[in-house]
Length: 333
Ligand SMILES: [Zn+2]
Image (cartoon, rainbow, N blue to C red; front, side, top):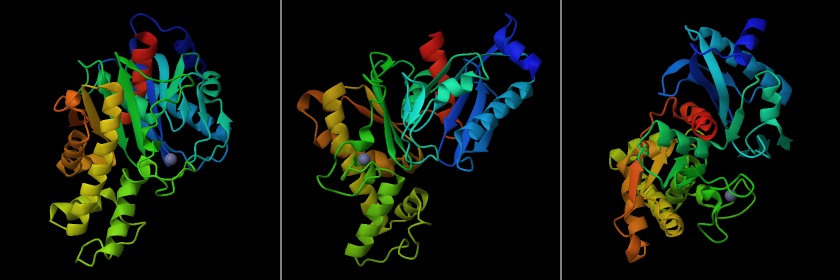
């Protein structure tokens, strides 16, 4: 361990420069050692939700990073640690009141990790990390103004203006999932009602399917699946085989997203909007109605100018690569 910490303190010139990218999710934490070109030297995952205390989690995470650095196969010099996490504050290096994590209140995460690794530790929410990943490794490398919308359990957004991720005054900018899509609508986990993510997310489309099943009496392959077992994948498979309920659920979801994105375009005038994550894997089923309803709600000055595209990042390690982008882009530059 001593020799490794020595290596961390004194990165020699011949060492390959790498960054540890970490993606903290509610259930799993994924991590990888990545160079500037996007080559992944080693990767692993640890359980997130089995650690009730933050100190024991940090201990496990630190040892996983050390293990990966050892596994790299050649001498590497770690330049920093980039972390994507729910409710992560870019300015303070904290995770604050994250509803899907065991650790409540304000966690001084970056400071805790710096006690083991004497390198920059930078964190932001997973959608901002995805936007950095899109900029460095994905399809936005030649764009200055674009938005990444992550469609997973919830809905996140990373907004890039003039080549920089927008963090806002207090570090939490880009919470598109919590703009009001329907006045007094569905209850959201944030405490408000009618937030966009209660309709447009893997969970949101499931809620829509169940509403449709109650209102419509058409045959559907989705009728025999209970809520816990229903997934966005199962809904898209049903839609591909012409299932009325599934197709209608995608249409409603795309309409909600497209209408909200028209508002976003009016504010930021992006070149493109990338859809990333579980629900985005449905491809045209979600892209088509989203594009159509965005265009319907745009002012003429914006019409036919904004591309709706699938993310250019491969799903398996995209979040980890995006997190590494925090160091490559925001620290090394
Ligand atoms: Zn909300």
